Amino acid sequence: MKNTIMRNWIVAIVVIAVVAALVVLSGLFRTSSVAPQAQQTLSPERMQTLIPRGRELALAGDCFGCHSMPQGPMGAGGLAIATPFGTLYSTNITPDKQYGIGNYTRADFHRVMRDGIAPGERNLYPAMPFVFSHITTPDDIDALYAYNMSIPAMPIANKSNTGVFVLPVRPFMDFWTLLNFPDRKVLRNDQRSAEWNRGAYLVEGLAHCGSCHSPRNFMMGVEFSRSLQGGEVDGVVVPDITAAALAKRGFDVPTLSTYLATGMAPQGTSFDSMYTVTHFSTSAMEPEDVKAVAIYLLTGKDGKLALPAASPVPLPQAAVPKNGTPMAAGRLAYMASCAGCHGMEGEGIPNVSPAMKGNAALAMDNPQTIINVVLNGTPTQIFKNGERMYAMPPFAHRLNAPEVADLVTWIRAEWGGQTVPVTVEQVSAQETAVK
Image (cartoon, rainbow, N blue to C red):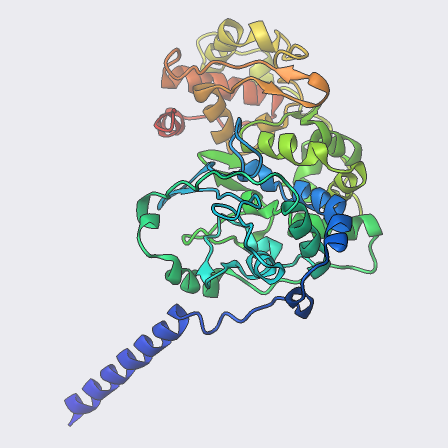
C-alpha cells in the first residue's frame, strides 16, 4: 500500500514537472510588454523627425560597437562574441530586407527591445542586452527605430553561430528569461536632479553598463543585486564603477566626463572592450548626456557626489626595495622592459604610452587585468581629436611567469598602493589566454 502511494506521488510530481516545463518551453508566460502605440505605423514625416534623437540613443547604447566589424560597414554585424557555450556573432541591423531588419514593423522592433523576442516568436540570446533595453520608453524605441531605418542598408549575410548555438536551443531561452529577466522599471527619483535621472535612465537602460560591470551567475545572467560592482569579460576583470569605487580611483564628475568623452584621463586610457565603448559610443554622445552618466555613477546612496581620493602613495618596500627580494626584481624588470615607454617615474609619454602614476588599473584589488595586459599587450588605439596610444607588445614570450609576477607586484605597489604580491599561479592561469 505504501509503495503504491509513493509511486503515485512520484508519477504525479513527474507529470507536474513535465507540464510546467512544457508551459515554460512554449513561452506562455512571456507576455508582450509592447506599448499599444507601437501597433500603428509611423508616418514618414514622424520618422524623419525622430532620427536625431534616435542617433543619440543608438550612440548611448553602443549599438554599432557590437553590430559592426572594426573595419566593416556600420550595422552589418559579424562581430564575434565569445561565451562559455560557443561563439555568437552580432547580426545585421541595417534596413536591408534580406539580411537585416528592413522588414521589421514598428511593433517588431519594440518587441525586440522590450522583450528580447524577434519576429516569428524567435527568442534572442542575451548577448543582445534586452534585460537592460527593456526599460526604454516607447517614444525612445520609436526614435531608435526611425534612426536604424535611416542608415544605409547593407546586403551582408549574418554569420553562423558556433558551439551549442548551432543546435535548436532558442526555445530553451524561455527557461533562462524566467530566471534572469526581471521586470525592471525606469529608475526615477524626484528628489534627485534632472541630470541624475537622465544618467540613471541611460546607465541602467540602453547604455547597459551593468552588462559588463556587474557579476554574472552560472547561467550568465546579470546579478542585479550587485549591479555595477565589477565583472569579468574575456579574461579581463571589469572594474567596480559604483560611486565609492570610482572616487577611490580619483574620479570626479569632470575627470569621469573627460574619460567617457575622450577615452583619456589622468586615471588612464580606455582599452580592450572599454575602448569600443568610448570610441563608438560615449565620445560621440552629447556632452550633456555624458555628464549625466558621470553624475549618476558618482552619486552615492546618500544622494551626494563622492569625493575623489588622492592617488595612492608608493609603498616603502617598492620605493626602496631590498636587494635580492621579489620587489627589487620587479623594479629591475620594469626598468628593463617598461620604463622606455612608460617613464622612469611612471609619467608615460603623451600620444605614445599611458602613465603608470595615477593609473586606476593598478589600484584594482584583482591584478588579473594588468597581468593580461603585460602578457598580451595592447594594439595601437586612436582617440578623439587625433590623440593616440601606440601598441604595447606582448611579453608572454619575453618574460617568464615569476618575472611577470615580480613586475606586476612592483608596479602595483609603486603606483597602485597594493600590498598583496602577485603569485606565479595567477600569472600562469592568465597566460593560457594569450591570443
